[in-house]
Length: 217
Image (cartoon, rainbow, N blue to C red; front, top):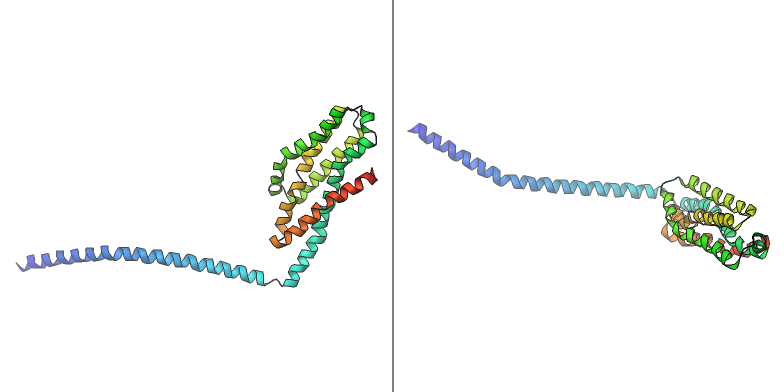
């Protein structure tokens, strides 16, 4: 009889233990969730503190020195390239005045197609500016400038309407790969509040090139 009583007491004790464990388990899971959330917050705070410490290592004078160096070596160089690009683009009008239509026996409609062909490819190949993110910038700009300078030079030896039409169309392709990507390129190096002035310098090369084109022709 005592043995049975002890057995019943043991079973009751096991039931109480199981019930207690079921009640405790959710609290453990909740504590684990809270601990994980707290750990993530701590890691985020530490990352922000490290970033703030890194930025505080540079003084305002050092930042200004870097910006001035970028202005001298990057912004002015891109402005020069933009000047040359717009110079090539506007030379076709000066060439007509100098006798291009007479030498190649171009009709009025053929000359208009010659102008239109450039802008058709210039608009259609704007997507090539995405290559700034694929090809290293110094290589990509070098290829663009080399290709459009060769194409512009080959226009001088074109002897017929089809040949100069093809060359002027290819010129639109290569210039579309460079000029519209300048704001994106500058945004890599400058902050948002510094960007507008630098883009303005590059864009101002366009009217400057047009003003010089007539004299150079």
